[in-house]
Image (cartoon, rainbow, N blue to C red; front, top):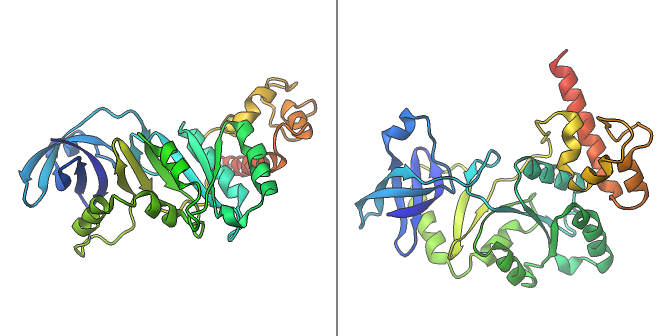
Length: 295
């Protein structure tokens, strides 16, 4: 029987099988022997122990098309990054750090601003001008007024998506609206893992429909610093790549150097000033971390 791991806790893997439900499984010993760890999102083959009790063993991992480090999950197609337009005010530095983290893992990103009912057209236009030149799709919605949720459903359709964002932005409200109508599947998972032994917050895939899953992740930290060399940070800002070719100096940091293509693009309004300022802050942190490392 083939299914997808939707949650993994304390050596137990909860595998969703379409039209069958969720099976509580252990992984066979060969995985430990080969130092292979099943991940949330893995497509797996299971041997059923009891159909009535919905128990089994994971016997084979099917080939992965992708693997993320943060969060540790397999076969994710895209990230849906949720911020609010107001209450709380969007922290664009945090947003850009998350974009860097996903760019480092080569994951396509959709930026969603919730609480559109509190916003105005000027803010929406500003966010589009800031992030669409970098190649990101920017959408607006209001979970409170059920606006834009159908558009998000279309974006998620047929894909496995990870959802992330800071607290207070309505992330859970959006996820709950997206999973409406699939309460049997999500409720079944909650019932299986709610036996007292599993209390830690973990990532979990929720089934939305045919070949469509969404993963609600724990909050992310503003302290993320890329693991690449500082000189390569610009590659995580997609709109910086073309202007970099116009820099006079190879290895330009786009900071104090003269004749810098990136600084010229900022001055011309082709790159948002907030993106450039956040780039400089992250770059400075990377340089400091590197200097401290070799001190």
